Amino acid sequence: MLAAFTQKQTAGGPMPLPRMPFKFRVCYGVIILVVLAAVFASLLTSWSPLDQDLLARDAGISAEHILGTDHFGRDVWARLLYGTQTTVEIAAGGTAIAFLIGAVAALAALNTSRIAASLFFAFIDLIRALPSTLMALLVIVGLGSGTAQLMIATGVAFSPLIAYVTRSVFLREASRDYVLAAQTFGGSRWHLLRFHILPNISGALLTQAAIVLPRCIVTESVLSFLGLGSSPDAPTWGRMIADAAPLIERAPREILVPLAALVSLTFALALISNDLRVRLDPLRRIPSRQ
Image (cartoon, rainbow, N blue to C red; front, side, top):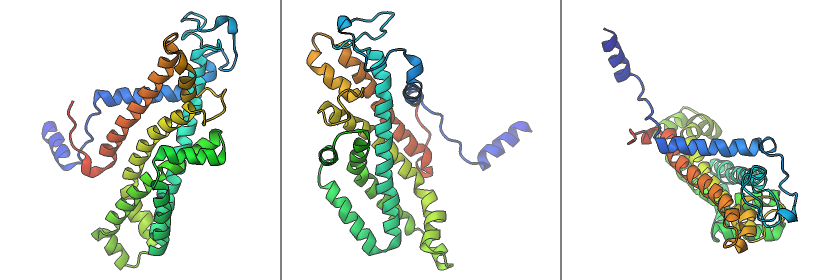
């Protein structure tokens, strides 16, 4: 009797989400470790990322310096931890600005009038005319270097990606029968957006945010590598790679450490975006292969 009841509940109840594959669990673990390293950087090392010891230049791995030192005698582990703070801060800020321009402003324009939508997407087309890295480079040249400038540059550069996805899903949902029925019964534009359209497109928008986040990290690293990111002393992953690039033959460890962190986090975020696309979109919830 209990088996029959369980079978009935399974058949009549909602379809459960597929079990998370091992590779996604690893990716979430990488992201959690990066966040913890960024939050508790000061507790995980007693060294300052800026202190130099010229007598200990390019020192190897030891109990005192668990990842050695760089060509200025700075602790690589400390610079990696504090660089995680700066890199994650810039990437999160850039993604938030891209989401604000590409999703919030796009929805407001699309829900106001066709003229407002045409003007907004004409502005988006101007940004889209240049590759994202080149657009971020132009913004940095205009605003100057710094953490806030990097956030604005990456946010503006990747806002077209979110804007066009927002327009696509908005127009798709706005033409659905349930939205037209709600409009027939007197629902205003903003009522339809808040209670009918937005809940059904939020999954797609969050997925795009997960896609933009690793791109912001890579763009920040490229700009820092070119010397146009934050200040020269700031311990970002891109700055660490740029400083260690000329010494790759003499001390490959100095460039491999931040490069491995950058590749791991970028790869994890890229896979997580695909996982979110499945889990947040009911139409894509299919059993996953182990």
